[in-house]
Image 1 (cartoon, rainbow, N blue to C red):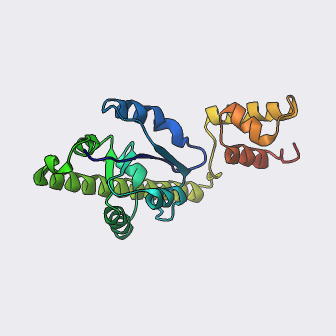
Image 2 (cartoon, rainbow, N blue to C red):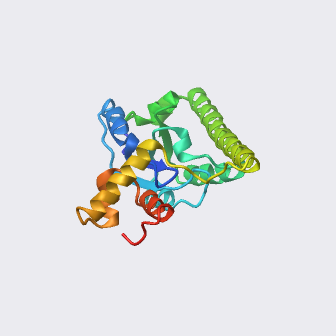
Image 3 (cartoon, rainbow, N blue to C red):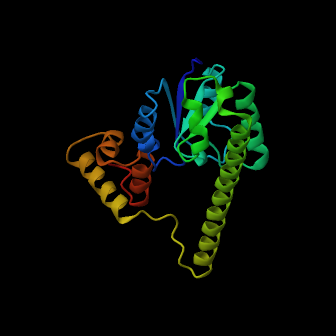
Length: 214
């Protein structure tokens, strides 16, 4: 029987997003295999960047046969082809396995048995599917970035571009956080947390609405 650690990697792209969103889903998924996570690595950084502190720490901590668990392959990579090859080679050199909830062929790595039972053919299929999902994640990133740039350019040309706008829900939460500061005398950081928004989002709201003196 092979012993291994379960190292869960949770990533969100921006401070406005919650990297812990998928934590419970991953815990339930692992429970089907009678496994529990041994380590968590959580960060808010773009998946298109190879320079990720927590991911690098995970790889540095890991021992051979350890397993990296992610919700989706795009949580691990939205990297360019060259950077993905670099990351994948680093993971392979440390003899780590990648298990992603959206990649069923990878789930067999969670079985506490000799991995030779997975078989060469299934191993090659898993590698191929991982490459396809990694490529798709990068393409999705580039497509969204291009559409965003086109939309901004069009808005600027029409004189309608006002920068990044808050959603009505996020705006309401910012207003609630401001009330926590002015009425309840909470610190800005605690007010943002109490209202369920990122600190950076609240500070941007204060700046845009001339409330920096609050």
